Amino acid sequence: MKHKVIFKNKKFRPFSNVRKAPIFLAAKQVCLTLQKSGYDAYIVGGAVRDLLLNPNKIPKDIDIATSAKPEEVRNLFKNSIFVGQTFGVCLINLMGQHFEVTSFRKEGRYLDKRRPENIQLGTFKDDSNRRDFTINSIYFNPLQQFIIDPHLGMIDLKQKLIRCVGSAEDRLQEDALRILRMIRFAANLNFTLDIVSLTAARNHSAGLLELSKERIILEFQKVKRGKFYIFCEHLENIIDLTEIIFPNGSYKFSKYNLHSKNQLAISKLKLDTHLPFFNLLKFFLFKNRVNKESFSNILTAIDQWPITSEDKKICSLFLKCIFFKELYSKEIDIELYDFLFYELITQIDLISKQSSRIILITLSVFINDNLLKETLYKMIDGISKSNITSIKSNDVVLLVENSQLDKKYISVIIKYIQYIYIKKGQAPKLENLLQFKADLFKEYFAIGNINV
Image 1 (cartoon, rainbow, N blue to C red):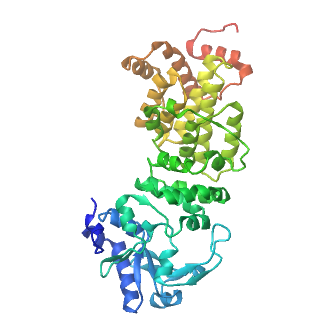
Image 2: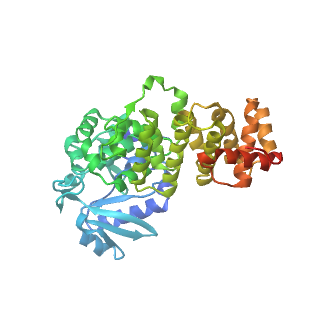
Image 3: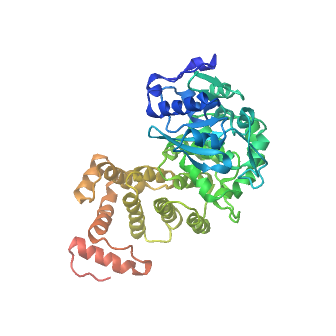
């Protein structure tokens, strides 16, 4: 529910459940202590932005800005500690809640596109001018219950607009991470980008290539589930994703004709997982045409990113699935090639139980294969939902019959399911293909010795 009154005047009260929440009561007490000592103190930043959008939602964290110097904050709150003395930041523990209390400050020039060359204590105006976006530069006094909005951020909230504070060119040139923050806010909040800020982002997009992979991944992790496709569209509108994934710029990819992509495929692609780099990779593969040589380059690039082992494995398996089904289909015996593919998607299911269904659904966007679309997918989908650890041949037959699928696949599917789950063997090498087939038939069809 939206609190429409805030767009008519600058009085504001969060809903009662927020006002009674421990984190809000503690933040109010911090502001009270500072104000009683003669200092200004306001809740500022994301907490105010989110409360204005939804006064009924309790903030997860609250930042406080004050005119008090760091030493004065320390004197008022004995259990406070400096967490960024250079930046004038104190961490206060009050009533079991933690708050970052930052003194009003002004910043010098950004020389390395990351940190200002110097930081000085400043005024309220200095503090508001240094902030990145207007919607993050709204100050709330929880005692008098009024809003101070020096950069008209409330108007931008009403218009669902992301706009830089002051000069967009200056803000985004100072720290390229703000470009990622800008499009993350736009994706998460379903806002649009101010055209001036978008133009500035394009002008200074080269700064993204100077960011560390760690900082980029942290931003990816903050994108809400279901919003990564939108995030990537904004990012691609600013910089070629190839330059992000391959910072050396040594690989070139041709773009797909977007008119050939249907809405059903896009809807499947929007099913995000908890794995940020995988979400980026599937968007990239959706927009860029790859060949055999580029697959190995992508795998090499993935290894260079500081992502979780699960994220890295899923990306690798996802690529290999496409690799086998699309690129080597004419060079590998059909039965072995289906077996190798099935083993790969089984590994995906085992590694990422909570996301395997989404990953496999996304895989159908990239592979034009009836066996995958009609049979294997439905089977894996059922496994993911029921958490079955083994598969029986009869279950597969019933699945195919009940779903009225093409029965010509039943025999091949059953052979490979049994081989994987009972035999638990490794995928055979190509040169051992004939022996593999012989062993398979001997084991499960009891036909005795056969001549290869």
